[in-house]
Length: 152
Image (tube, rainbow, N blue to C red):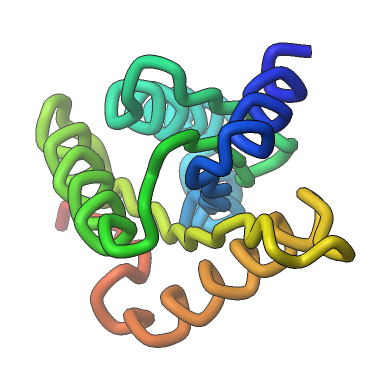
């Protein structure tokens, strides 16, 4: 309901509206090698990181599994890279806040409503944000890959 109102408000005022799609990297491996309790902790840490990175008025939800979505009113396209970098810094900080056997890592993509396109839906923007997230994930596979720490 709140997200629907945010979308209508942005459209009526012609203001920017972005959708963020984020994915917790390596959840399957965390679950398989460290157990589901640790996997649940990683999901909670990812959710907390997202929530703490967002601005007042932004709305975040877990889609299920390791995927999250956020509605970002008033985020301009030229600010999206800065926003993603802020999320990456927050993720690194969360990862350093407690000792864990892996590095917390999120991949994210942002897409924008184009109010001049009558045929575009919020679902279209979500799909595009998901595609951008996967593009970023593939581009940074070497740096964002889950690293489990083993003691000898």
